[in-house]
Structures are given as C-alpha cells and as structure tokens.
Image 1 (cartoon, helix red, strand yellow):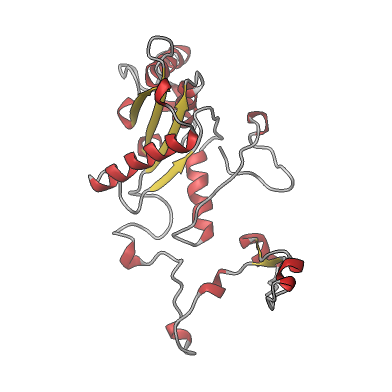
Image 2 (cartoon, rainbow, N blue to C red):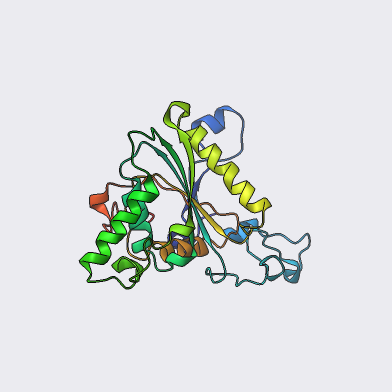
Length: 250
C-alpha cells in the first residue's frame, strides 16, 4: 500500500495497529503506519472504470446548488462553551476581526456565569469593538472595529445560551447543550447540511483569515465527512511551523 511521496504528503498515513498485538490475535496484517490514498475507498461493483464511485467525495446532486469546494453560500457555525471565562469576549473579538468572511460566521456561546459577578461575553465584546473603533479613528471594516454608527458589529450573529454556573456539569455536558442548539437550528432550517461547524474553546486566538484557511484544509481532505481536529498550540506559537507542520490555524 506504499504510495509515492506526493500522495503521502497530501493524505498522511493510517495506523493499522500494533504489529505484535495483531500477530498475537491472529490477524494477517503487518500493522503499523501505511500511506493513505483515498482511491482505496472507491468502488463500483465491477471491473469497469466507468463504474468507479467515491462516496467520500461531494457530488453535485448532493451539494444543494453550492460548489463542490469553497464556502460560497455556506455559513460557518461555531460553538463556544464558556465557564466563567473572562477571555470569552476577546475570543469573539479575535474570531471576527481576523476572519476573511466575518459576515458568514454564526457563534453559539454556552455562557456558564454567575450573573452578579461575571461580565457577559457579548456585552464585553461590544465594549472591545467600541474601543477598537476609537483606536482607528471611527472604525471602518470589522478589523477596525466596524463601521461608525454600528454599536456592536456582528452582535446579531452571536447567540448566547446562558445557564447559571452552579448548573454547569463539565465540558462534555456544555458541548452537548450546544450540540442540541445546533440540532434545533437545523430543524428550524437556520443551518444547512452544506454549512460548516466548528467547536472550540472560549479562550482562543486566531490567525489572519483563519476561516478561509480552515475551509481550504477541509477541501484538501476531499471527503465530505472529514473532521479536522487538533490539539492547539500556545498562542505565542501562532503562525509558527511546529515539528515540520503548521497546526490547524486557530
């Protein structure tokens, strides 16, 4: 199954298991890492090349009128669980001001605060954008704090699901509530099956045009079921080539 270096660089490898364990359990496989080629998943039920089908590739009939790549006409839905996090407003500021297409982003924040003690994520974000407009002499683009007269740019794209901090039950529970919100949005036709979804933390920074770069990464997978995952590096390492690769840009 070894492929050329170009294929390996593009698609990576698959770990088939510990060779010793496979041998012990009677499997006829050498295990270890093998170069991955998506063509292995294509089948057509016959030897005729014209019957070849690749179920992982998005087909025009399933694209709902959208292109097979890119995100023209698609939205990016973000889930941010936040537990009394003072950095949540800054995360909103960075994700919008550093995005290439900020108007195509929707954010759902599970805000687990003590209302009498913790400032609201959206409210503080609005103050930060006001300060940014002032620093830029009246604003303009989103990166400059938004246009003059817009008190809080993109506020209508942020949805706060607030619960009291005493009712929090950990990150899995929080992400589950946000997952239910996503499902509700789908049932209400607010979210399309062709949209993108991203789950991350409420204390993040982002690289410039991070949204466009992540969609391009997803396109490179050539798999409509692909999920990009990473253990994010320290914010000081944004844009740094780590161990010979660039991490997912957020």
